[in-house]
Length: 210
Image 1 (cartoon, helix red, strand yellow):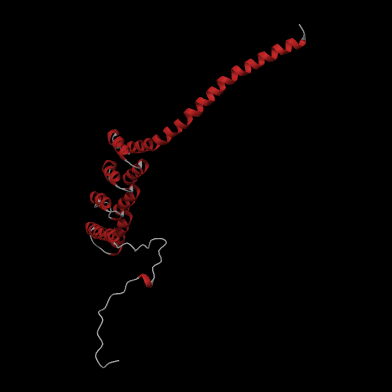
Image 2 (image 1 turned 90 degrees about the horizontal axis):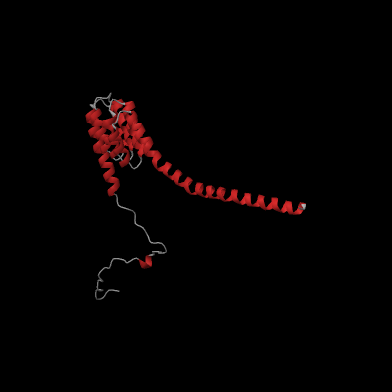
């Protein structure tokens, strides 16, 4: 048998082996391309809820309450941060804070309000602080109001809470009822010629007058 024939046989065998190895590799690569994005998406969706549940459990919230709270939260991480901050920096229990944090539009701002006011009032109005900060649509401003007034005026914490929540409601009401500015449609060019003047009755001329 000639060397050429032997070489052709070897080349065919090598080519066949290469094809046999390439097909499984391509199949595995295609499978990984399909599954990896799905895994990443699943991880991104579950991560926030996992962190939320873990943090709530760490401060004594029951598994049932943690699962319900995290599942209902628009921003699970913010909910957990709110509860943990209040639990760690005040005498308010995490289980009590969970409900207020869950109802808040901005849980972290609620926590800032509760912590600031609680420290200022030396925890004497804790149950009320949760309620008042939760009622306020501007919790950070509300907390600043309570702390600022009490720094200069000597009156009970409950009076400061009532005063600032009333002012808070007034500010929000005034901003929501303000008259919107007049909008001129694009392309229009109002001028004096297009603006009607008030009509006045003509007074007839008196005889003998110029």
